[in-house]
Length: 217
Image 1 (cartoon, helix red, strand yellow):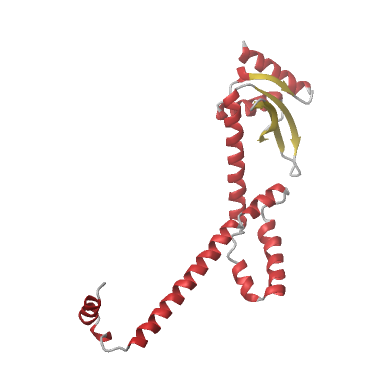
Image 2 (cartoon, rainbow, N blue to C red; image 1 turned 45 degrees about the horizontal axis):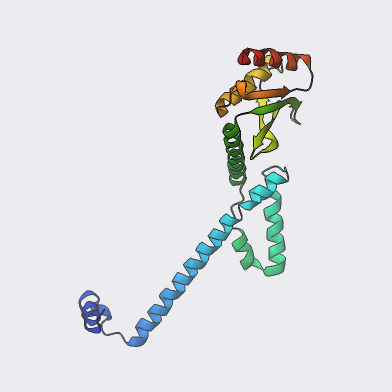
């Protein structure tokens, strides 16, 4: 903007500042720049905190409870940083989102992404084989583990398809109903199932055999 227009703007819009000396405006400019720098630093720390979401991936890979991040990892990191770098570094560490809810949600998001990726690969090549096993977790609940084998880029791939709780009984019919419901949810067809393997229990294997024969007929 032309100097004449700047002067007119100052005298008309900010008359109370028209008598100020040049040093006043330089001082205000420096103050504004320091504020901008401070805000930029805070936003940068926040972005780094978001990058630290990889902590959820570490917790999931180590198969530890999601609560360990907030109750064990964060306090340990705070103490180490306090000893090595002081309280200012600890305040930056506190910006990392490691609450139980956040870690749990991020693990669920990763699980959903992996599930979607596997489903898309199976649907692309259609044919699949299943291995089914029923087990009991440490809380006494029955869990149905389903592994899948399929073709991906001309290679045979094995992966976990799902883990579902058997809420009532553990009969073969219950196992089939849970598995069939999940396959329908994924858009997978029994007619594309070229093989199924169970742990050999009659109650489990016979029900699957009869039902699969019905779907293929």
